[in-house]
Image (cartoon, rainbow over all chains, first blue to last red):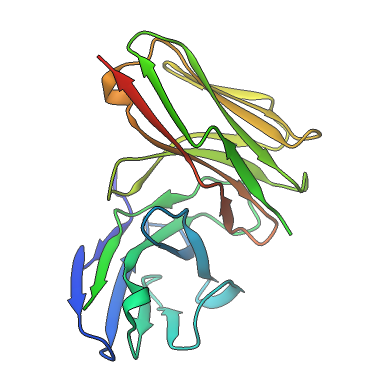
Length: 114
Length: 111
């Protein structure tokens, strides 16, 4: 069965650079969530999209932005990178946001800022 | 504000033991609760999903229960194996759909 695909799997950037993370949800899933997991931390919710519109916003820095495209894939854009942005970034997808459905996670993108 | 707490933070058991992981949450207005497994540096694998109207779910050697009124869930692992060693995270789903995670229980099963 198709899963949530994230790319790239690993990314190394220098401070003040820009990074773009991509997420391809499970087919027919129209809701996408982004989470950030720092070393030894639990995943923290960043932002979510439903039907290409932002549906909820969490602790996402102003330096980050995201969008969901017409094919439902999503991109997380991160600018002016800081050392503290080094983390695992997860994308999850699910069926309609109001439904009591299961969230499926991708394998994550490990971002290292040097 | 919803808070999710998992106890214990770490657990080490010999192979073959049955064990219980605990999860508590402060706001009972949830849609569902999911248990995940995470291996070091890896992604989150969904183990069990319990809807707010359900009391428990079973998958193989795993059984998860939910008591929404008291804000508690448990994950029971029967006959533990070294391959079960991982971090187990519980997460509750709110109305807006996002998951709020506990900090996890890191399990080590010794051969």
